[in-house]
Length: 253
Image (cartoon, rainbow, N blue to C red):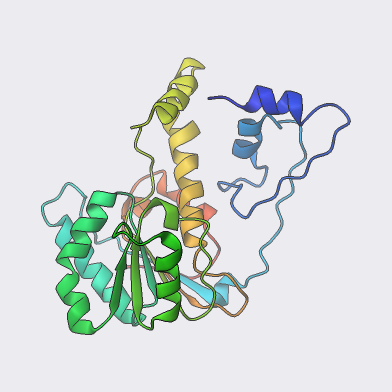
């Protein structure tokens, strides 16, 4: 559950050198405190370098504050309406990222007629095709829209015009439905900490950064990110999410 003591003993010994690098280590703070504490490198020297991309020119974020609460009876219809609005805006070429497989399947089923009418190519994770095949179809078929869950938030590279729109349906807070996550939350509480601010929130911020990071892969990429979860502007913790995202134009609808 807590790897920090093990890694501190095995890797971060006295007079040893290690370099750890990634585009998504930080949750908004330049000292990389969350990552350093997780791996037991509290004495390590952090270095946060700027991105080679010009996000001010390459990317724009839309936040739909008008979205209702997910518990509201109108939520799914509004979700479908805004997804339709933004995939039409870019004529496909979109990833729609979900946090729930069930929600993804439900929305995909309800929007089937929309995609048939607009002659866009809808690809949905979980239909039997492996991720690699879905990605290949997405890259090679014009006007494609891919609905994906967990594995499409990170580790996916689609440079160029094939992907110009990433839609985040909900902030990616992990559901404590696995023994590992439950154990991590309990460990924070046992140490007198707050499980939300010390684990759930930073993990969700990292996941959101990974999802947003699908869009700009080269210096010539252009596109939009759409966030369909109004908590990012209505909740106090929303500021932490916004501060961790690339600095680019933001429009709130």
